[in-house]
Image (cartoon, rainbow, N blue to C red; front, side, top):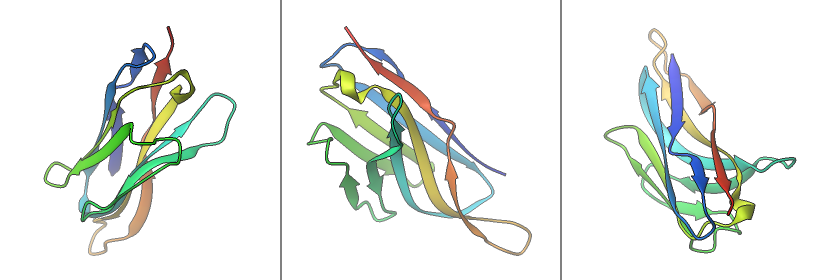
Length: 123
């Protein structure tokens, strides 16, 4: 029906960069807010960044100018550019999308999540 697939995670040294991508596919009518969340080992899931359909952004307190969220509405894609990575950024990163999808003659609204992509920052 609707799928979110993340990619771009991996192993990186402190100070390095990664670019995460998330593609939304399926019977989509429209996508509202999208976001990135992360879950560090042994901790709760936390907000990384969100972006509205108009491009307004919000970031978690720990980002401090290091990450940039963006989206391509034409391709139903979401991105997270991460720079100056630290070991404490190690986590599974998840994308989500608040969207309306097509189901018969209806357009239900639902929040969908991707399966996550691992980011490991270590020397």
